Image (tube, rainbow, N blue to C red; front, side, top):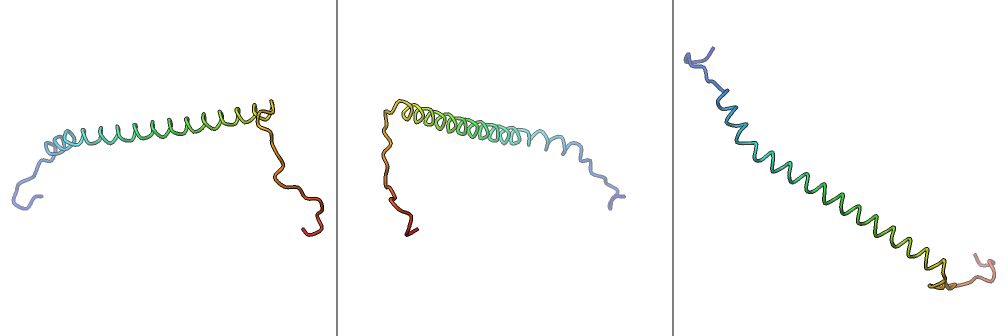
Length: 80
């Protein structure tokens, strides 16, 4: 029971609020979608670049185009 015999109708307010919030929800959805697409593209580019580097390194070692030299050699293991 209302205090002064007046009962407020919230259905009109609810409809107006739902119509006014739709652009913000759509904008947030677009931001999330665009961000997730950018993250997926970034990770895919990282994977492709890493795979390309691995393939180039394998071919360089296979055909001896990049000779691997010994950086140091141990003649004895007494002091270890």
